Length: 129
Image (cartoon, rainbow, N blue to C red; front, side):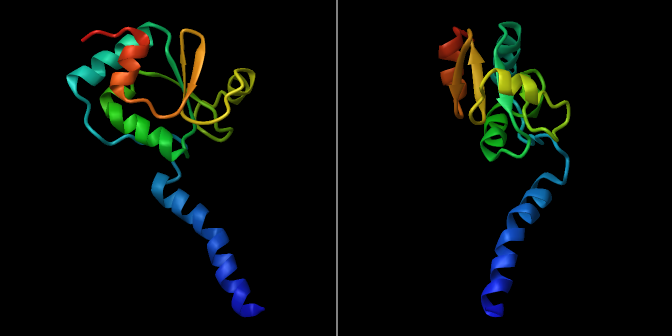
């Protein structure tokens, strides 16, 4: 029994260890890639047109989505933090909007779940570069 319990305890603590070391306990996404001129223009266009990204700081798909934009462009986006313990959390808004997963994009009142390429976002919003 003891032989099974120790590996089980290790596995149960592993996700929180990986999570905290990956995010350095920042409670916000930490995008590190560089933006292109096009991704910055798209992000500004999305912001100006009321597009919202619903996100959670601990979500790997949200980080992947952010990396597609790059850190400079990502700062331009309207991002709503849904995690209760995230920085500037707006959990109640996420509940009211019935956000089911992350990332979720709100475009023209429609919720779209999942990572979207910059090309897909451009097409869905009418962005022309």
